[in-house]
Image (tube, rainbow, N blue to C red):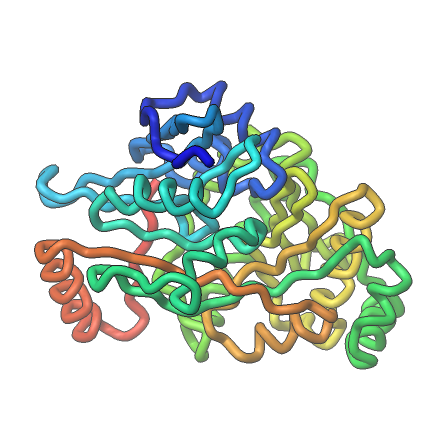
Length: 345
């Protein structure tokens, strides 16, 4: 039996990165250069081409952010808190996985959300392999549906309340469509800003407000992998959801809704139409994405029949990074109520 070792770690071209993402069975949209270029256009994107002595290979994408005048670098194994890790067309063994993990964590100040689609990554959880003391693991989960069960079984798997809400929306004149024009995308952004105001006034507070430029980038660069869905009533958008598609994986990334129309239950119909469309088009998984610990959001997803999949976050910090984080937490604690940490274009 050959001992597995890393032969080389070299920069991967964008074409190689994209090619491997297309061939990898557990890659998500968040592992593609498209995502990095949309969400973090001004960050440095590094794709590491890792080859092994037995001929296997993998690509590890990383986003780098320079801080404190370049004295500090934060590394994100996928930006925006999304699924990270490596992608590969090779049949990797647990030994390959351990060595890829070591390559990844060699980067300081790393944030790495484990990809729930790559079941081999379960070997990285503390129950399987104790993590080094310098690492912190934060438990989290996503909620997902197995679309291969078929549309009828998916509908039967929902709660009675959800099925009733879908019927209420349809009877109330709510319809669902894909956004096609820039005007529709801009109207969705206005809907989002209204939702931000509502979240700030209640318990669902958000420090990150995405700029309009981000949604314009998605609109201009969209193909069949990025779709904005809108729930309409009386010719006006009253709810929306931005979905990313890759391989057999469809994932909800962003949503907003008009509170004055909640009685018509637009979100229930909106998500059901999105889920049904993905199932009809042959996608295997609909992923609701993590919910940030908000129980009401988790319950909404659970009533669709979604099951929990672990997607914990592994992070490391140098002493300097820990000091900066402590200072920022202190500043946020004394910031005026309602202040936000806006993500700049």
